[in-house]
Length: 137
Image (cartoon, rainbow, N blue to C red):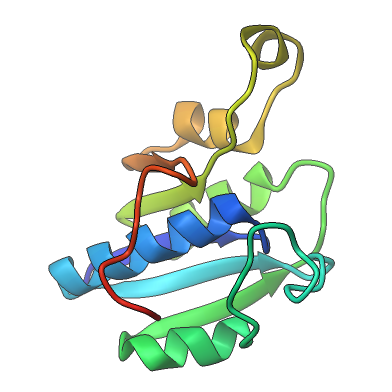
């Protein structure tokens, strides 16, 4: 079975990535592996998150086979994502990205950039205003 990994932290970027990952998993009849930071902000207070239900509730509502894995907060969350790709037979990675200035891209590395460069499997980078889910999850 195909496995899609979603990196999730409550934010508008992750909400767009969540919607894309769910639709892609349905299209491919795949399972979702969701990596969520253990010290993520409270979803009720996170900017851009309008759904107040828990992530587990929302995943269960999709009807997809899924695993929600909480990972420790690290300086570089890309390590957790790259480890999961290797150890969990991941076929596709979905990450939300925010818009950054050209200077910001040069000066600051990012988790999404590192994963996109180092991942042995395809990575989809989803901007918050480019994917609108056709249904509610």
